[in-house]
Length: 186
Length: 266
Image (cartoon, rainbow over all chains, first blue to last red; front, side, top):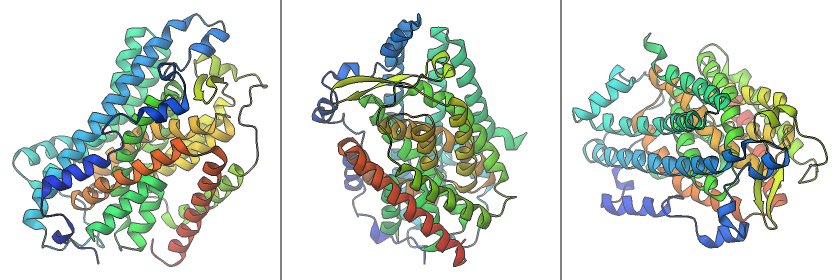
């Protein structure tokens, strides 16, 4: 029932790439009209906590501009992370379908993936040695690494702000993330 | 079949990852472990892509998201570890009941702004309160019941790890109903958190060999058209319409899962 039909992919891989890129929600900046519709002063939109911090008599009003900066960094990081990962998956996928598109794949029976496609190091090695499945898997790994990079970036920003509550919060999340990827090998 | 899976991915972008596991298993006959792996991948892609756009629009409460990720990551790790032990059949029925209940809850009327009550002191201490754009300019909001929200988030994380879904519905329930956030802040902050939650589960599943490149590739690439549609709809939609639509999706998901479960698909 579930088979690879190469005919379903367009003949021209670059056309496919452009078509998908055109539909990415974050390919270009959101139309200015939408933002203007939502808020008359778009620059205010990212100031998450300033109003409330001041209302609470909170002395950390300085946080608001760095929070705004953090939001912009995270937004760009997520955008380029997903674009990069999708690009690698797309190239790997097209290469894979060119060679293996006629073969049928059966996903009804579960057999765990080969060890080479299960650990971060194994995947990088597989991709470097020219494995097409390895390349798709590398793209998937880059995709999974995007949220991790986001947490790491937040950690560094909070360290710079000396906001140690959030340094602790993001450090903990980062440790759980890293452990989930490498914990099985210890 | 690739088109079908691209379409499945598009649906994920619209309806959340919870759609993809039942569809892959019952319609395509894929083993649930492969389905969970592919679903997690598409969930990360959708969440990260949409979160990037939402953050720019100023709805996402970053600090609240990061704080609650402590709960969801613990939950996701526990859930992914439990996945081999717990019977998925039992869990699916429980989850379906939870979804029906949250659909019922989200239909309960409540004022859009509830600033008359004081904020949770914990929320003030952690600088969680925020402001979001409205047609009249920036409007501040207060956060309530942080411990309750934290608890629901942990359950959401466990379900996410167990079933390979984003648990967006449960996350929105915690933010919207328990912590009394404006609806658009709830949905966008939930989207922001889903990427990290799903990445924890994905790490565990990758090491176990559940993530198949051949299956994940079309599912992941298919999410983008759907995510684009979903983001456009959310930004343009009126809140009551959004709430009703959300409830309908929850009910549909619940019935679909129970049906799949009883027909032996899982």
